[in-house]
Amino acid sequence: MPLAELALENLRCIQRAELGLAPGINFIRGPNGSGKTSLLEGIYLLGRGRSFRTRNSERLIRHGQERLQTMGHTLGALSQRISVQVTRNEPTRADIAGVPVGSLAQLAQVFPVQIIEPGIHRLIEEGSPRRRRWLDWAVFHVEPNFIDTWQRYARALRQRNAALHTAPDTARAWDGELVRHGEALTAARLRLLETLAGHWNETVRGLADLHVDLHYTTGWKQDSSLEQSLADSWDRDRHRGVSHAGPHRADVQVRIDGRAAREILSRGQQKLVATAMVLAQLKMLRERTAVVPTLLLDDPAAELDAEKLARFVEQVKSLRCQLVLTSLSAAQLPFGPPDRMFHVEQGRVQPV
Image (cartoon, rainbow, N blue to C red; front, side, top):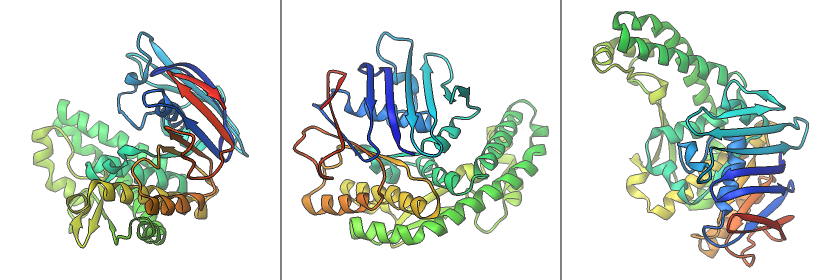
């Protein structure tokens, strides 16, 4: 489901831009600060409803403007027009084929997109929320009912936490919902990691020459059920006004010889391992589903030596998906001649 057309208004330094994209390799070049990464953000918004650089979408709005809009048209059997609008002091709005979406997660059904960018090491270095999002994005594509389970669990969790603040004696009425949907959510995540295992081992060794384990922790005591863990943490929950046990506290721990990878690996190695997490996921989706995501690459050759870059290029080419990549110079073409090329200068985008 590649993206065929992209239109942006008031996104960071870009006042307006329109691009026709090829289903193969799309190359965006220009100096630092010209708007190359902003174009990738606009594409990412269409499939995620948020940026990969900040959780505060209002920061994407061009200075002096009240809103931004990004619009796209996908190709393929599920060809659709997508629009995402971010307005100051308002929730992000999105529509598919002119129909407002109930959840921004629905965007991924129409336009699945992933990115590998200079900050990808945060997938290893930072806390569990980023790794949960990485995992859940893949589960969503493999198990169509997962989004409903996730939303039901999230709704019950919000209700329980709200009750802990306003009427603590009623909060445990939500435990049954949390257990039912939380156990289903956890089982789906574990199935995904089991399916991913072969692709993961192959990819991380081929890219980083490392043996790295992905270990899922449920978000509650390993020797206890979720139901029992909710009961055991009740006094603490009531005292602090928040639910402590459950898959919202889960993690995909990245380990080497039983130790946290972030404690052992250099920044460069962390980037390679995190990149392997994304590529293994995309390989698995290509094999198990009809999903062929668009992959965004922000200056992929910047911090890789010749050997590592060659390995990376080989791994990416095996995906046979739409690529949109950026670089400072047209001399850096690691994937060969692009199908489309664009030059960005001071927020202006021109085809080359």
